[in-house]
Image (cartoon, rainbow, N blue to C red; front, side):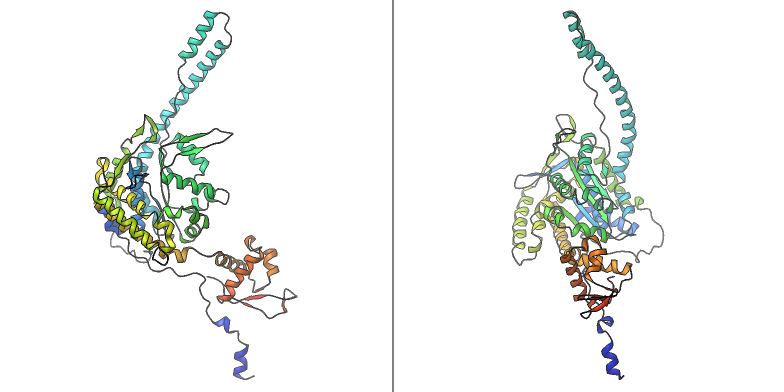
Length: 505
């Protein structure tokens, strides 16, 4: 056999590298840390230098902590008259080993220390409450028995007087719990009935939330809808036949979830999260890894850095301050309004018009209309948070300088959303193709038919249309190739069959 004939027998596709199924993620632009101001920006830079975590991750963490600290004390008055919380929702993508926990432990130290301190006192107060409740129940039961069996008018009057003397039912102390990781909507409601009115849905292991009960197929829609309502500052209403109904006013929730790429991509590519509007409310960052570049000359405790100490003092002061509440109800917040200054209002008008132009068909933000439509509001929220961090409880307005920084940061987040979108929002056919490739590789299957996958393959691929779409992705990108008509597969002739050339990495 000559050389040419031998070459004709070689399957060229086997020696050609396949095309990637997903678009590669472009390089991230540097986070504009200077726009966070001296306190937040300085602390983020110090954390980056001492912990060696990505700068964008550090910025996300300090901004989230600042939002949580500010949201119980202040609301932003938007220039069109709406009053909104200073709550921010942030999502950060970071690989395992990026020191997510180390950053969060430092940044959230003030709030968590306050929670621990109050929890100790709460245990004592709750034991006292339970004792008083038992006494009240005993006295109430005794008074009710006397009232139910009066023999004379004087006896009835005496029994009623004793019932009156029992007094009102003791009130339970407010649980100081502030940080939650994976609450269902029902659990969140019950928590906000008994605990602090300002909470933080924070986690450095976002998989607990993204893969947990709150966002499973049964609960995802109602969970996302409720989060959106809390972001808007809407009341938390619930109507149930079994355990009662109610409506909670003046509650606030900030969110920051840090997760590895594979986990976060499930949320970022989720059609419901996009369609429901949750992701339009989120500030997403996917900073470049620092792993492999974190060389040091000496160990440094980030808590010893002056910039970190300054932020700790600011956050601690806000955590210890008593928020304004409505008519003495300690669980119904009535935050102070932060209006925009005159120059900030004009800046907001200009921003609304510019974002509107950018949302036009074919313009830069035409594919991010949902996010761009909320850009000015979120910029105002960021500006409000920075005003509170710099002025503390004395903050009374949002200046043009603060809003300018908020708008620059918002532009960065929109650019980041565009950068991530191509890599994070993956078509279902590609996800299915990756699933099929992994299944075949795990079983060392080199050739297969549709019957094989429909009968034994992954559950989601036992649908003929989805299976053919997945195979189409693998064939068109050079991972699989069709066999000749009538090829023998598992001892039988197959009308259609395919062979594996490459596995998806």
